[in-house]
View 1 (cartoon, rainbow, N blue to C red):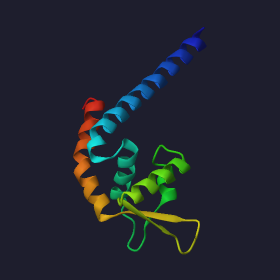
View 2: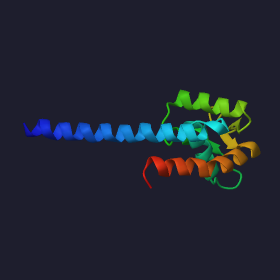
View 3: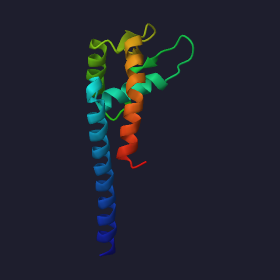
View 4: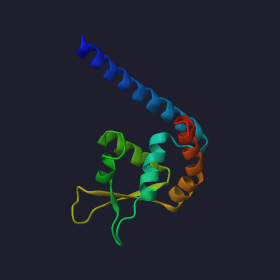
Length: 129
């Protein structure tokens, strides 16, 4: 009986986490809609804006895979869409042709800077801070 109670408590905590996640994503999506961005779009722009690669280095798409909660194929599609919109640019790694770099464009950096306070306010509202 105790095992069922512990399992039920664990399951309830998990569902609470999922509910907070869904509410937070919804709040961020609604807030960023006027900028033409969704929560995942902004997350990629935010990670790229925060990345400070060493001089002459770039951010590999592979480095984003573990940090963005999307499959590798979904992330690739998202990056392709951001590139089409002129917010990021991709390039092939010359040393390893399988590697792909991604970087913010000036337009992407400007949009990120404009949307950043809106996203952070939505995050604070959703998480009750």
